Amino acid sequence: MGAQDGFDWGWADSTGGKLDRRQVGKLLLVAASLTPSVMSGSLLSMLGVQGSAQLDEIEMKIPDSALARAADQHAREELSPWVLEHSYRVYYFGKALAKADNVHIDDELFFITSMLHDMEIEHPVPGRCFAVRGAEDAERFLTDQGAPRGKVVLVRNGISGHITFGVENDLSDLAGAVSAGCEVDLSGKRIQDMRRAWFDAVVAAHPRLDFKRKVIETVRREAEAVPEGRTALMRDVGFDFGVTNSPFAE
Image (cartoon, rainbow, N blue to C red; front, side, top):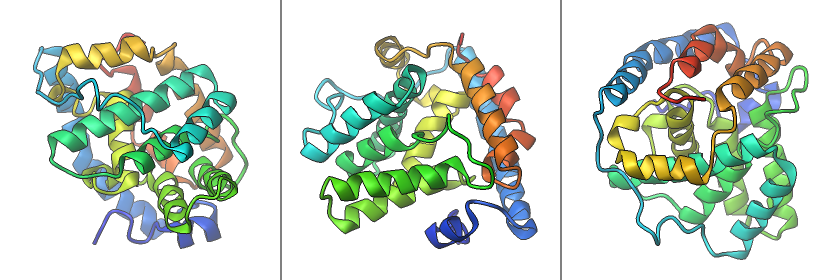
């Protein structure tokens, strides 16, 4: 069974992202299996271990399509600077990991999903998960842009699913690639697989802007708004600790 089985768009739309007891149990088992790799990644990075994952100059350019440019402009207009820069880092980190793993992802759709994935993170609504609402926002925006329905659905599902534990193990899926990029930026997971000079260049171009403090506070407010959601469960299993102890200064 895939990581999103039981957590697809039908579930997200109908429940607002609320988990039942069975789903909580399933996600807790997944979280337990992921914890060692997150901790080892941070430790290896602090010890100076690095891999070869990086993007060349051409790969660093954002997709040159009308839809990608529209999504980029939309994100620039709507997101706070710290969320915007996080979104760019997610795109570059996720893309580098997919390249290193020899996994093909649609660059245009991955860029759009990365830029729009946290559109609602700073605007909690009681009882409805920010990822579900962000997916709805993206669906409306892309539809208004005249995007083909197939692309709209892929991006919507990628945004809705990116906070489901375990999706980051499948980088061929938009939710998984975004989640993997987020994991690098939040906890340092798989940072040891990247060439450090390239990684540092990405962060210099897209600075963290007091990221640790801001994301911890933002996630706390989201978890309080949706206590039965995936974000609240994420906090229960150590989100704050993971972010605080990630191998970044801020």
